[in-house]
Image (cartoon, rainbow, N blue to C red; front, side):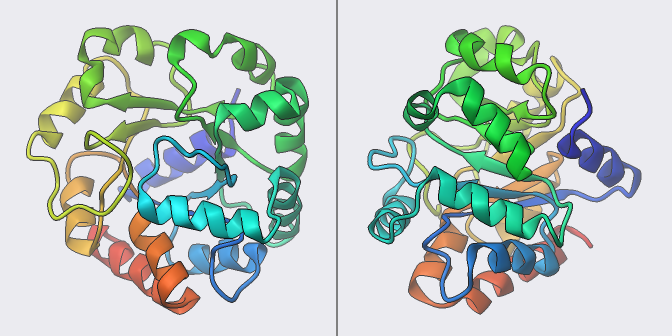
Length: 260
């Protein structure tokens, strides 16, 4: 089933444009509302946007995103808060929107109800870092008839199972460029090109690289090898410690670096 995500990547390919995908944590985005932040990121050059669902034990996230989740939870931001904000933004934009959510939240909500409420709100994809490929069946049997992509994450340690993991990939491949948790890094992994070529040998689904991309120069380096760049901690830190405008400025810089 075609989704906004697959349609977006088709359009980007036709324009020879690389996808820029920022992540932010609703409730820790600075002075603007969640819906305003979605629109602000789009105006700054985002092609797709990831929103986090705050969780008390974000095992894949480093200190910055952990801090943003804590701030959001203190404000009372919950799954329904994010759904409501996406509905509000959907009145003004068709940009593909994804949730980065831990499966505990999905399980507690109820997988079928969660998937259907995602679609009703205007969510196009799910990124679930703690849901192994082998255990996705409970969710994917619900989402397969919905315009909702469950994004496959592939790490450098996935080599022996790449073919199996990538067989049913949809939307885009989330390529984890570094070992460990999220967070800004001083440089891009030197073996990234080879890693992405291995993935390409098994699938034509677009490859988007995340974890550790810190500035415009790194974004340009990554964009040379894959179809998209994901930025999280560097943006979240600016939203937390500086301002919404500082975050938008980073996205504008990255957009210019990887091509308009």
